[in-house]
Amino acid sequence: MKKFLIVIGIVVIFLMVIAFSKNLIIKSVVTKAAFSITGAPVHMNGFQLNIFSSTINISGFKMYNPRGFPEGTLVSCPKIKVIYDRASLFKQKRHLLLVEIELKEIGLTKNKEGKLNVDELRLVKESKSSAPIPMQIDLLTLSIGKIVYKDYTVGTEPSVRVYDVNKRKSYKGIPTVQQLALLVLAEPMKEAAIKNAQIYGATLLTGVAVLPAALVATYIGKDYVRQIIDVTFEHLYKISLDVVKRMGSITKEDEPGGVIKANIHGASVALILRKAQENKTEITISARKYMFPKLDIAGGVLYQILDKLR
Image: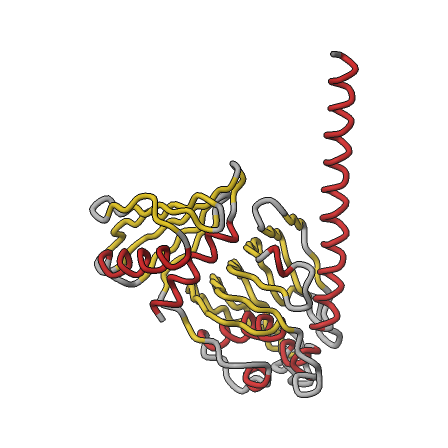
C-alpha cells in the first residue's frame, strides 16, 4: 500500500510539472507572437491553458512603449479570460467563443517629434502590407478603465490628461488577430474623443466592421458563462428555448422558474434566466460532461442565443 501511494504521488508530481512546463512554453510563444505583431515589448505575469474546461486565463498583461518613446506602459490588462473551441487548437484558424478583456489603463504618449505611440506600432504602420492572421472570435467583451495621455511636445515636462472612460462594450465577429489588437487600442480612444490618430484608419483596413452586441456585462466562471442582456425575460426565454431545441434535446422546461435543461453534444446543459432590471435579463449557462466543465459548449449556446438577438 505504501509503495502504491508513493507511485501515485510521483505520477501526480510528474503531471503537475508537465502542466507547468506546458504553460511556460505557451506563455513564451504568445509573448513572442505579440511582440512580432505589435513591435512593442510585452510581458504577462501568468498564463494558464486548461484543456478540460477549454479556458485560457492571462494575468498581468502589459505592453510597453515602442522605440522612440519614454519608458512606460502602453496597455495594462490585469485579467484576460478566453473560452476556446478545442477542435480548432490544431488548425491554422483558431476559434474563440468568448474573450473577456479587463483593460485597466492605456498610456498614450506623444513624443517631442509629435508622434503618438499607438501610431508607431508595427500593426498600425504595416496595416496595408502585412498579411492578416485569421482568428474567429465570436464574442468580445471589453471593460475600459482610463486613458492617461502624456504630451511631450509642450516642454521638458509633459502635460498630462486623464480620461476616465469606465465603460463596458461587447462586439461580435472579429476576424483577425490584428483586428482584435487594433480594436482594444482604438475603442478607448474613440470613447475619450481623441482625434487625428492613424490607428483609426488601420482599424478599418484589417477586416470587416465589428458590430456592437446589446450586452451589459459578461462573467466567465469555472463551469458557466453569465450575461446580462438588454431584452425582456419573456423574449429571451423564447429565443433561448428555440436555440436549445435546435442544438440538442430538452430535458426540462420551466418558464415561470426561468429554467431550461438539455443534452447538447453529450453534455448536460442548464440555462437559468432571472429578471435583472427593467427590460434586462440575466442568463447563466452551465455545461458538464462526465463531471468535467464544458465551457466551450456553454459558450457556444450563449453565442447562438446572442446571434439570434442580433
